[in-house]
Amino acid sequence: METITLREVGLRDGLQAEDRVLSTDEKLELLRALAPTGLTRLEVTSFVHPKAIPQLADAEAFLARAEKPAGQIWSALVPNERGAARAAQAPVIDEWTFFLSASEAHNQANVRMSVEDSLQAAAQVAAAAQVANRAISGVVATSFVCPYAGPTPVEDVVRVARRLYGLGYHRLLLGDTIGAASPSMVRRLVQALQDALPEAELGLHFHNTRGQAPANALAGAGEGVRLFDGSIGGMGGCPYAPGATGNVATEDLCWLFEAEGYATALDLKALAGAARSAERLVGRRLSGSVMRTFEEGTACGD
Image (cartoon, rainbow, N blue to C red; front, side, top):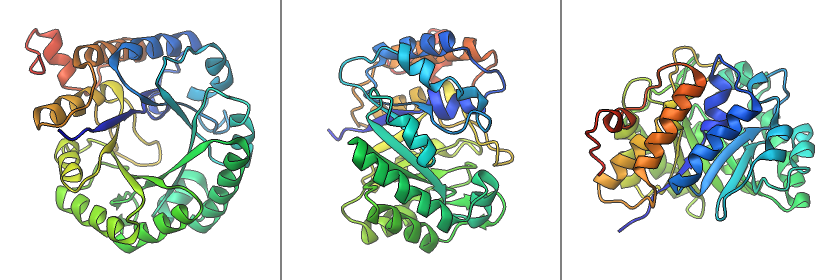
């Protein structure tokens, strides 16, 4: 049985898009709710400037109090040299994640830099990570469609991925930032990157704006991808991508992959419980579906 790894990004990508800013205590409560799920990879915070992402301004305070279960790998978003200096002081963080967009228009809107300038920042972060002895991974946003420029040419994604790989980012996640990908687009891009960078570890990061994230995830798995991002309950979005809804729910991906014969080594009931905790903490109804089946006593994953 093939194993799928789900990387939980709710504590970072989820919370940064919520209107309600959770306190450090509330974030720690959500972290504790995730502890019994079996998740081994979590993106837990960001070292972006607090003025840019006020929802995660307490990164150091949160990490100082967070208890890390044995066997978990924690990552954090590190956008530049200044963020790298902060991340280097957080020994609990195992992996630094750098992101940029394959679309020039989205990169300018998102980080106010050209793609080339972002690649220069990626080189600086990679160098700092080597000094700090930390692993690195790269996320390529708008790998499928840009909210400003339309469909992203495959060759643009491949070009950015090649540059990141050459800098040492051997784990590359492809982001469907506005949830506009289709299964055929996923297959085409994954195949192109497997041809261009056969040694890279590819992952996929889907938003469920048009309800296609589950189908897209299965398409990626069918091409051999074994790493997928999910956000508990479906929290998240992108403030620079108009109309983008939350990431695909971690518990929904878990149910889907298990139903299709993949192993995830996750506790679906615990994931549903964590999703309900997330919903209560952010104070709004989240988009996850599987959590509802547990509420209604019809848990199809049992």
